[in-house]
Length: 74
Ligand code: SF4
Image (cartoon, rainbow, N blue to C red; front, side, top):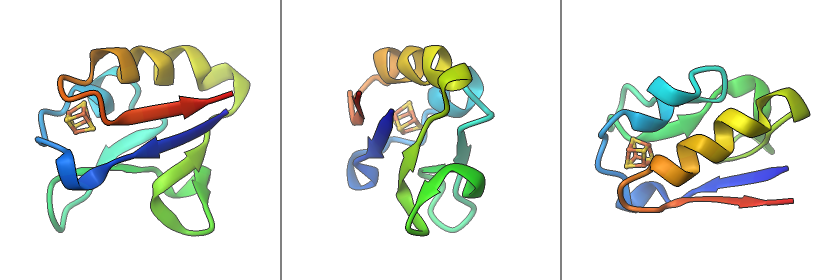
């Protein structure tokens, strides 16, 4: 499952990395969300591939994001 974060619109609320810390984390530089290194696509911090066992929590984080900027594609 492909996951994209529109980081420019992130409010740093923390919901995604609290909901699914195995996939999302806070970027120390700008405090916006990023994909953890292990699951990044082409080294891009805003894009990643979620393994099957994390799909549920990534979907939950996407649903809970208050500005709806986490996009998932199956
Ligand atoms: S839930 Fe959305 S707004 Fe909040 S930190 Fe994550 S990506 Fe940013």
